[in-house]
Length: 137
Image 1 (cartoon, rainbow, N blue to C red):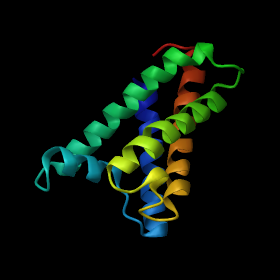
Image 2 (spheres, helix red, strand yellow; image 1 turned 90 degrees about the vertical axis):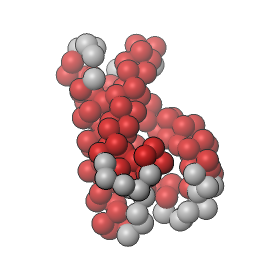
Image 3 (spheres, rainbow, N blue to C red; image 1 turned 30 degrees about the vertical axis):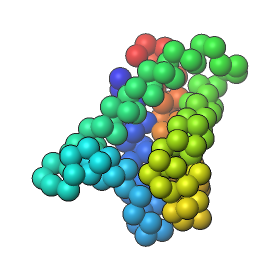
């Protein structure tokens, strides 16, 4: 569970940095919260909660897959897992459903790089925590 929490916190740190640098307001918790409960009090809280739960679920999937992944470096495995999830889950599924096009190119040309950096941060986090946990969730 902590693996997903750490990974999601790192994702969010990179997200808020890239929003500040690029000015492209792709704030995932805000988007999730507004889709979930609309624009009202509690939207940001609901969005952060759903995003955190998503990060935890993905970390659990990573824990199930990591023994079957080649190589020894768990941080590299975490990054590869996060990039695979980015391509399949976000680039080919979530972003097109949101109307942003494949890999977000319909929204802005910077979206593929922005989402890649965020997911690399998440992957580093889950790989780092897994490495230190000796495989215990």
